[in-house]
Image 1 (cartoon, rainbow, N blue to C red):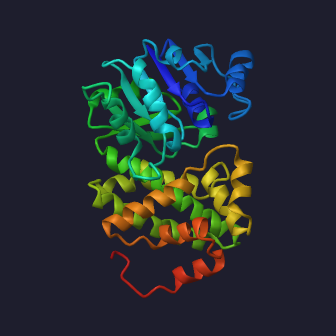
Image 2 (image 1 turned 45 degrees about the horizontal axis):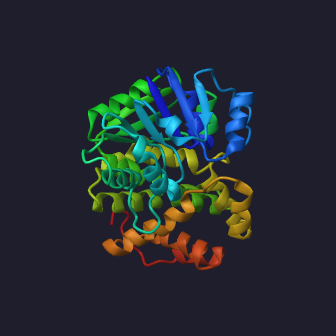
Image 3 (image 1 turned 120 degrees about the vertical axis):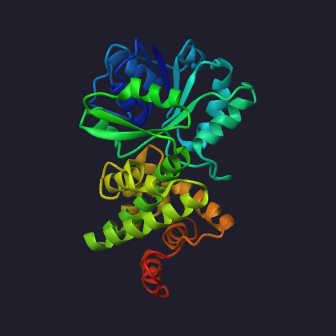
Length: 334
């Protein structure tokens, strides 16, 4: 079996290291230096230093070479580059290819999920509907690459796509659960990044565990509220892609979104924080997309809207959190 992984950042590279059953694992990157590092030293020194990449893993900047004859194509690029990557890849994908999105984000302008972006883009060339799955869960890339035990969800209405994910990644350090709720799994994976920024703000402000737990719980309520409005199963948000991912990212310095929040809580400007990361913090553009979806659907999202105000409207962090605490009383389940 041949698998192409488009995107050689920390997550794409980590996924390559835990593939269980493939004769060839081809990593594609636009960055020639990353490809050279992987090819010459068997290490992605920029995005995943210290992790040795096995012999089946190769790297290339040639998209056609990466995808040729692949049984599965994994999209692990940032959400902002998903449409252009899918459009470029379309010419090399066959009608028998299984597609997998591993990106946890939404289209900033439309709010579309990544599977929707890929499907819409590829349908312009492929008249049939290719099987596609979304992979999400408590999967911090450095821990996955070190083969520390965890679990993930492969969500798709297609059993073929779910089975492909299991064949690729089910192993001693990664348990793959199946789900048909691709909408819920993708929305959970994207929206938890917004909550992770909020949790990081609490940490940066010097607030305690109670504050972070309260914000995570109310954030989960917002995730569920919006997800159900778009047809998701509410139980999905209590699983690995929802609660699981929230727990992993809302207290971990391995999470870029959490680190963005910490910096904001410490009074640092967003541009400075982003520049230090050297990778995309999906929660920043996703906050804009989520608030747009919520507004169009008429759904109240006070936590997400507060984070939006801090990120994009220059709202003072302390006053914004104070405003959250002084909202009118309401029942928890409402």
